[in-house]
Every structure is written in structure tokens, then in C-alpha cells.
Image: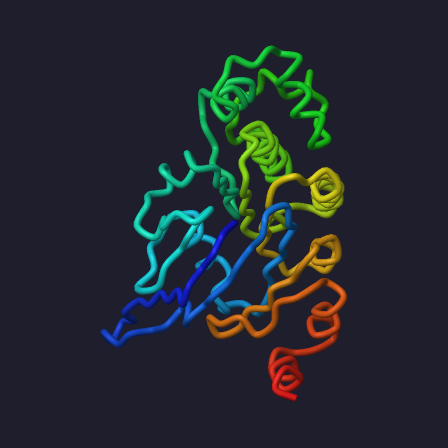
Length: 242
């Protein structure tokens, strides 16, 4: 279980003034939940994801994971505890083959057959990718699916995805949706996805609506989707105040 307690994150702007990016977020994410976080650009979604996985540290507040205070832990230490992160733009590894990446992710010497199973999970033809380098020869959609395959191979308790739909074509996006639908159906661990896409929000168990660095609404998909669809942020906020 993940808990955020009055988490805040501020930076200094060009004039030296403090700018609040995350402004007092308290949140509990239970086990085996598929959670989508959405909201307008600049609402703090990606910053929140980076705070959870340890890329940046909060200005104040606490982050607990399974009851343990991880506020000051590095991203590596959080990974050891079972937290994975998929970047908005997946990292390329020139000279490293897909099979090597999957073996590193799983922390064991996977057989070719075992590695191929993970690639099949994300809709890739294993024989076409198993020995490919994770470099510029792969498209954005291919890289994202390979990254998801590594997360599945890690079998982590909490997987965080930062706008997985960013920068990929429609065909790749449709393939990604199928992957996430399968993950949601077979989900035994927690999945947290930052996204604007209605099709991703529609397969979530719960949706968190973020604006101005604060949680404006958090609830079931059925309760929150009407606030998201067909409404601009000011209208959403007015509805929430009513």
C-alpha cells in the first residue's frame, strides 16, 4: 500500500520566488488497484509520479510504502522495495539487446522461451525482437511495449507509468490499450498511470483528478468520469464545490 501524507513540492522560479507544484496531497493507494491520474497540463501529474518513485524528493510531507517511510529513499532503493517506473520517453540502451534487458529486469538468467513469453504479453512477435538492440532502430511504440515487458518481468508490487501514450502513433496506442486491458484483467499488484486518454481512464478501477497541484476528486471510474468528460477544469471545480 502506498500512502502520501500532506506531500508538497516547490521550486524557485526565475525571479527567486517560490512556486508550488504539488500543494498538500494526501493519498492512499490500496493493493491490486488500477489507478489513473488525470488533469490539465501543468497540474502536477508527472511531478507526482516522480515523487512517488523517488526521482525527486518532496519539500515537505511523507511518503510511506507498506508502512515504511520512503520519503528520503533513492529511486534505486525504492525499486528494490518493488516500485517500477515507466518514463514518458523510454530510455534507449545502445549495445544492449532486448533479451539482456529482460534478464536484468527479472534479476535472473531467463531462457529464450521465458523472455519470449514476456514479449508476447505486450503483443510483440518474440523472434523479431529478442535479439534486437534497444536503440534508435526501435519506434516509440516498440520501446514502450518493451519497457512494459521489463516491468512485467520484474513482477513489482507497484508500477507507475507516466503518460504511456505520449509520442506514439495510433496503431501503437491501440496496441498499448490492449496491453493495459490485459494487465488490468490479470492485475495482482497496483498500477498507477498518468494519462489524458479517455480509453486508458475507462479501464481504471479509480480515477484521481488533479489540478493546481491538488487532488480535486478521487473515486471510482463511474463517479469521476462524468467530471472529466466534456468539462473544462473550471467547470469541474465548480461541480466539486457544489
